[in-house]
Image (tube, rainbow, N blue to C red; front, top):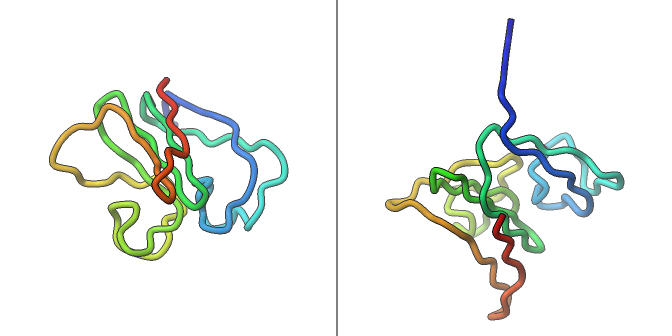
Length: 109
């Protein structure tokens, strides 16, 4: 029997053209109804931009997803379709996403 603990889940909706909703490659470019994204880690901070999203766990780990061109997400490749851990030298407590020099979003849970 398989058992999994879900620590955090939230509803997402909107554009997924760059996989910024983290639902995987089969989700399509637009998600028109609220859809649950379940994460098996304890999330303390979420930050969402136009083309990518990220979250921090209670353990200080960072996961990113969406458009990864030019190393934007700290992960190689052009697009990351599911939350993927970023290897960082230090633990993180919160995230900011800045677009064109302006603070776009910061959510601390």
